[in-house]
Length: 520
Image (cartoon, rainbow, N blue to C red; front, side, top):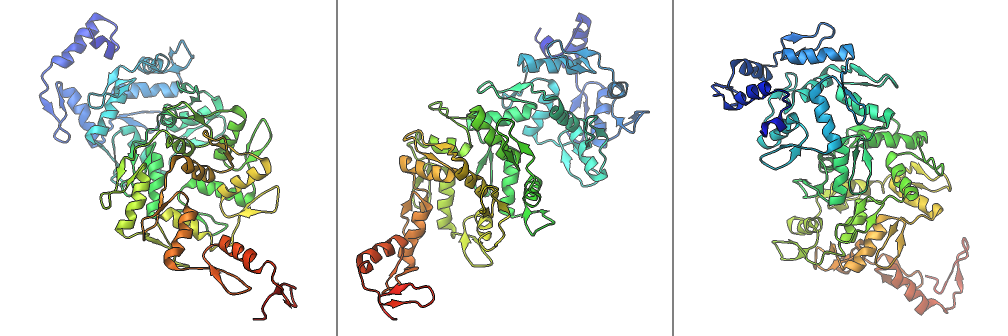
């Protein structure tokens, strides 16, 4: 009988008793969520979900539970008893059900399938929690801030934000956590245990979520879309971080300078520009890094790891998803995204969205210091560093300093000779992704930069910048000899060679000795 696969039933009597659950008439209906039950006992237990009633209290700590069975299982956390052991990895569990679910990590079995999206899960509880993604059900509500949650454990952990309670402490480093789940995740730092491995590249992870996020690198899947600009992201965290760009919210402020950041880890990385700390050291060449991200990228120069793989031709890239994305233009010839206003078509959604801003009023983000306008809050933020003279990111090999850490990272490659971005069509290599992407457009023919006055498009932003002077009449490059002005420096140089190279210069400056052909 197939029911035996879904439920751990050890005897025929237990199976017979279990089948009655499916056949019984469900006469007890919850008036808050509509769920029905065949037994009043189960109905009463369910109502505690909405009431947050927890009548079963532990006499060894202050925890309370809705069900007596849950309290019995909880007692094992105090005794330390874990009678159920995995015969493959030795991990121990307090409950047989937890062991059965764990074993499916090794077998890969996922017998519980969602009937709405066909996604499969290792345990019934995982599937039950997942179905709330479709129903939107969030039965667990915080009585302090009214925030609602789909899982009771999430609500329980959330409440500790208000109390500041962190009862779970690591016995190796003393760090404290608000939930046992966070402590378990932290313990992997000490144990190095990595049970979840990628079947494409073999990379192993300590958490199932980390593996899932990693796998999207290979598939290119980006299911999370920003409703304001249409940008796509691999996971909710990246989307959430991106949304702060639109709000321009920067809650994390440095107490040593006036800089502020959208994320706490960015502030932590920034602090190191003041302290000079570089806690990440390469065990192969001794080079040190201030951020784990820079360290991980560097490690690939030794390991040869290339996690970004093209599904069309199998070519792999080491540095970033941007490398893979640029490469995939080679395979894509059709232009899928069409502007409804003017009919122009584009290969990429982002390019279309940027183009559409020409129709909707152009650049909305204005610099309050110079009046320059930009397409996005991110571009405006990058521009504002032009007005600041602060250059906190210093090169330890020469006296150059930079306003942004990524500029310092690119500069380092001048000293190391590293050029990690390689064109698979002509073999040319580049120090930074921007130069690489610009070069790839030479092969693909993509012209993402459009003039908002004549709709002429360009492969490089610099070309568009120069072209705009055709419309504005701006000619910032002036010949000191005759006063003739030019829109580009190259044209001024040609003029100087052609007109003034052999010209007599009898008038010299008494301060710097520079000579001129005219006294004026």
